[in-house]
Structure formats: structure tokens, C-alpha cells
Image 1 (spheres, chains in turn red, blue):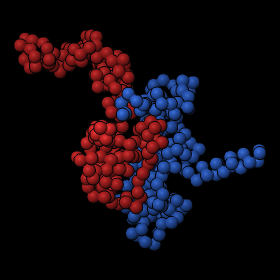
Image 2: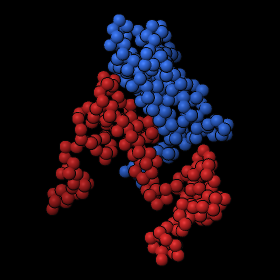
Image 3: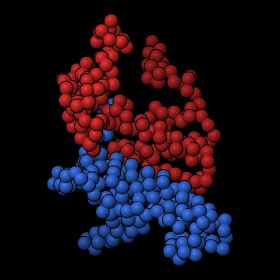
Length: 186
Length: 171
């Protein structure tokens, strides 16, 4: 019985990857597979990925990874292609909100939490209207954006920028009735 | 005992000196990453690229003060002035075979190919270190840098941006 439990636990822990991913190698310490390709491409991919992990990761990553680039393969187009691909892919991983080191467990729900305590209207109305920090910087923050919550997300779209009187959508794309285009309206 | 410590200190200083820009902010940390085994052109391109990348606005006023743009316009030229370049980098490109045009081209090509990669690496590393420390790099037009608001030790803290502990998204 113990053997069966052990085997079941082993499969659960490895998510049965032994079968589907047999032969694939991964970037050390991650669940990121190195895509198939020529040896030079795969080496370049690995090096590119490790480089950006070192650059944009925290002290944990900087301890674990380092700059890796083979000068002898500098003229190898496969290597350089893989290097660029690995770097850009892992860049998005390492800075991503949900799975990267800047993330938190609830970041899927509150994507701006760390910056602003997440008030949905705050995407445009609070410090985001700053011309250097703002997601919508320079276009004029909407003064009529109200509150937070799920509906607040759409205020930016439905009520438009300050003084403009225009918006991306004429109505709430999910709930408002009496107009065209919404998902759940009349 | 004092002599022992002096020797250790001297050893540390001397070993650091072999790394370019070791005395500048984060200079030793990032420049020691330069790969070994490259051609002289590769090494020069890497150093120039890193110097240029570390001196962008991503690093703010402090890094701009220590690093600067350093791409050689003559090496990047489609019709490089070889004698001028040879004279300019007597020490750095000493191992180039100046009688062999292929070797010269190879070195110049290495320079140009690695420049932007080193630039990107050092720019991202400086930005990453600043963000890990929870610092906002001051840029022209914003507030004057306040050193009292920051600590050098911040770059090693684990609860800032980049926290990878359990429940913070990494696992």
C-alpha cells in the first residue's frame, strides 16, 4: 500500500511530465522548457534566458544565474537567434506579474495592487496621470471616473478622458442597456 | 596580524583591478561578467556596450555620472579608418593581426555584434538592481536625489520588488 501511495504521490508531484516532456530539457530552476532546435539554437536560448534572469531578477536570481555568452559562437546565426529568443521570452517571465518574481498570489485579481492599492479608476486618475509614470500619461485623466471594483475598470473606457467627452465605448461593454455592442445588455 | 590583513586587502584590490571600471558603482559586479575567450574586438565591444548601457537614464543621475556612451564611430563605419583605430586602441587591440584584413574584419564584426547585447545586459542589470532595492532612479525633471532615503544594503533585501518567497508568485 505504501508503495502505491508513493508512486501516486510521485506522479502527482511531477504532473506526469515524465511522459509528455520526455527528452525536453528545462531552464534550471524553472518550468520553462528549452524549445527543440539545433544544439547551437538551444544553447543560445539557454544563455539568453539565463542572462535576463540575472539582469532583471532579484538577488535570488543573481545568485543562481549569470551572464553567459559564448564568444566563439558570436558569428553563429543559430546561436544568436536562440539567444535573442531566450532572452525575450524569459524577460517576460521574470518581470511578469503572476508567475515572475514581481508577482503575488492575488495579482491576477488586482493587477495594480502593488502600485496603487488598486482603485480601478486609479489606473488613470491617481498617480497614473503623471506624465512619467502614467499608463495613460499625457492624455488627460478622466475626472469622472469613480471608485473601484469590477465596474470601475470600464469607467476609463466608458466615460473617457477629462474634457474630451469621448470614450472608447459609448456604453459599458458588459452591462449597460439601450445601446449596441454590449455582451449582457438589451 | 595587521600585516596579514593588509596583504589580504592588497590582494583583494589587485584582483579587482583586472576588472574594468571596478571602482565605479556596481562596476565590478557587472564588468566581471564579461565572457572569457573573446577576440580583442569582442572584448572592446563588450566593454563599450556595457559602459554605454550602464550610463542610460534607466540608471538615473548617479549612473549617468559614472558611465557614458562609448560606441566607436570609426569601428562601426562601413569604411573604417584602420590606421586611426589601430592608433586609438594600441593596448586594447594589441593582439589583432593588423596585416591580415580578415582578422581585422572579424574583430570589427565582433565589436559591432556584441555591443548591443552588452548594452542591453548592463542596462537591464542596473535597472534590475535599482528595482530590487526599491529605488526609483531619479531622472532630469524629477525630484533631486535624496541619498538619505536609500541604503546601499537595500539591493540585498528580499521583500522588495522581486520577492520570490513562498506565496509571492514564484513557486
